[in-house]
Length: 396
Image (cartoon, rainbow, N blue to C red; front, side, top):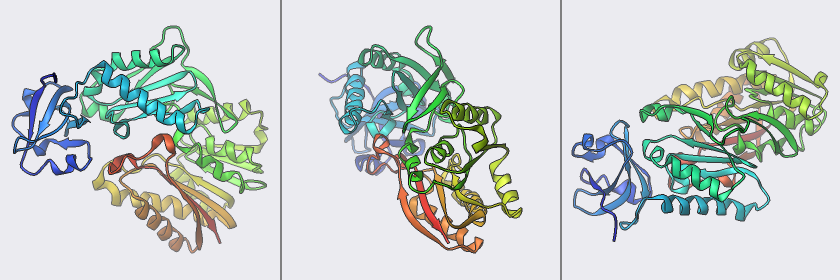
């Protein structure tokens, strides 16, 4: 017998998006008083004509008032429900790459677990919870991961802006007693020392690990600029593949120090690198005006756009950094340029690159265009799960 949950009713015709596969219901689509619900409370969603639509959780404090967990009217949302979902998500990844120990194990809505991300770094599992509905099951989720992997070191890294919108406190802690926050990981045969409590996102950008290999056939003998370099992953890959010299450009002194440490960790000669701590946007402009040249420039900035109404402003920012980079690249060199915002779609990003090339007076050829990897797979038609763009261009 199905568990009884409160009913949440939509305004007329607002069920179409959800029935079409989307996961979010906004506060202006709800009929009735949302204040009758507690933050994260489970409920069943109905159309204005009393048709069952979905089961999920609600938060009156959030603009996204309801998130789908299941389309099954008999679904019971309990520990077993989460166990099955997490096991299925992990099994999908391991079926595709059974030897991989560094991957996104759970990817929110794309695994029918909105508000939950779990990244695996061998025996470390970084858990990020962004919604009140998922927060209510946090203890179950942590216990499930521990049961699946008894040697797991659990780290909760829930620091996102989304939690603020859901009126949730932040957490940044090692959950497993007496275990360090630091770990040396291995990505593409390079070592990186990660302090999970001091790092961005969940510790390392696993979504780019296949894209770093774009440098394998083009880096040898080249001078490379890794802008927005964070802990140095792009630049260290360039050096591994034979780059003559790599310059890191990063505004954070802490992340620049991590890049230095990672260079030493991989037994590279520090003389092969320049570490420039400064604002990358500012420095790209100054370097291009100064006539500095590079063979390869990598642009992997943080998201410039986090709201749909800011896309035009963000395009100007992306165009500026790409224009400056293109002015600096020697003929026969390469530009690797990325965007991690789902609001800027592929066509718009390519247009930005073309506009930048035109204004820089350069001709470019798009050699390869990549997206996020298999463990960040896009659930159709959920466009929000499709975010990463990485373009490799030859510069004439």
